[in-house]
Amino acid sequence: MTRSATPAMSLAGSTFLGSVVRAAVNLARALRHRREIMNLAEFDDRMLKDIGLVRSDVEGALAEPIVRNPSSVLVRCVERRSRAERMVPPGRATRPVIPVVKPARLCA
Image (cartoon, rainbow, N blue to C red; front, side, top):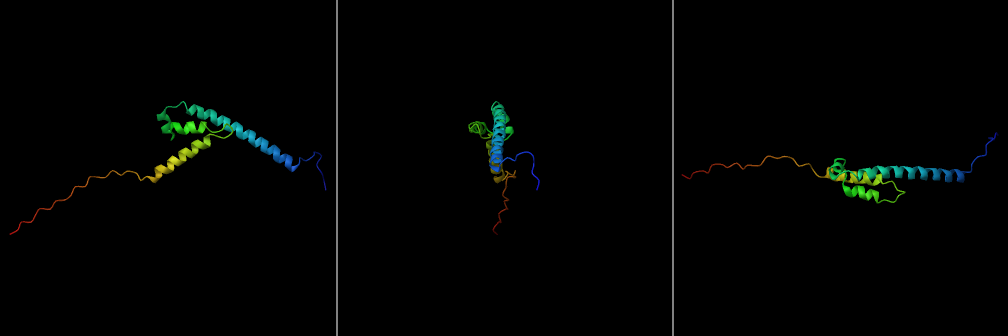
């Protein structure tokens, strides 16, 4: 049996280190997304509506704790709104119904 010359890290140590690295990467991603959402907060309501958002969605995302990724809140808002719009049947343009009037029969 051959052994490597470098000491192997224990399983618990590698798991802990992996968790710390993952947490740091997630925090960096959350901070980057928070900056991008702050840019969205500068849009006017019409521009937000064009991308499927309303002002309260952006404010709700920025209200998330600093360690959580606020973009997930915006994704859920857009998905929820999209599902609600699919549930409502589109309004069909219908022609007005004009009743057909038959001439009255004359009694003889």
